[in-house]
Length: 473
Ligand code: TRP
Image (cartoon, rainbow, N blue to C red):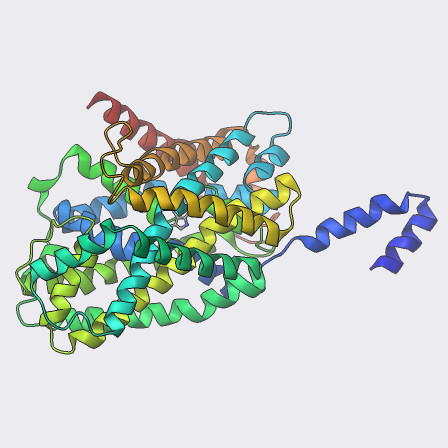
């Protein structure tokens, strides 16, 4: 490579230094190795605490099947177009969050979208790694067979005792973040892709196993019909916002995650099918998680509307009453931890890729700096469960504020900006070109027209409508 470069300089009389930095930069940019690798990494990002922790409790609070149907509608009409728009930006620019917009729209202010995305990822990772830490602690408790006896009081005291204390959650949060950082330091192909390739199939198997166990419990019938028979009387305008926010959170949209991963995707991959497969895998996984949790909740006569504690309070109670519950508990919290890790690495990668490309940092240094920043912010989130519970900003604890600001605000704004950028700012030809790999893929014109219609009209209008509705409330 270097010898060639020298020869080239000699022939064309170019300054050798210029071309060396050019080759240096292209050589440095990592990429995914195989298309299966891309898919599992993307699915790994999408499938996470959003599916196993957030989706079940929102489902329980918002009336079951009706919430699922609204959620599915949003995934198809808003989630998928936003995902494809992010794919187009990332793969075309081959650059991280902010640089991507600058490359595609030089001299404009669109780079701000990338910066907002990175800020959003910082907020998400701060509370996400705290919950990931809870997952690690609960796996440890499950391995010690702590969930074999007890009633609802035991487990709610256990959870509140743990989550409101000072040191233990902080240590768990540190461990979870260190695991995340360790994988991201190894890079895209050797870290993220390798880890996801092994863990994702394992995760699917574990959750399917638990769903079978849960659905075959005596008295699981009402739980199953809760999942599949819609009760529209529970649906309010809040249900719509919750379903939309959840679709964005679960598909990892609106925070430049898909832009960053797509920038490592090769030019010959079919991005429409990758986007559709990722969304399908995430949705199927969420539904299986619903089938793993709700039937058991009903079989043991527990209220489905428990809220964020559902997985950490209600499930241990269920495990303690279920035949083979001690073993099921180990598998469940193992799945939770692995799912959280394949997602947290994607959130960290957005911030790290940004630091590498914007501040010309080395990967290791970038990971170290971001680790420290997130650990400190996470400390605030964790303490806001206990000692800092009374410290409120806009009436919310730090933890709730970070969750709200990201999932219900920044991600939706990010999604809106992304579809407007691709639908109205990028040229039509560029969009077609990227979707069809420069005409190399023969796709039906009907499919392309539908996608562009969704990106230009349906997704932005739906997002604006929800925002207006929200302000009006
Ligand atoms: N989708 C993940 C989950 O369901 C969370 C997540 C991963 C995420 N990467 C993201 C959310 C990027 C927003 C942005 O748990």
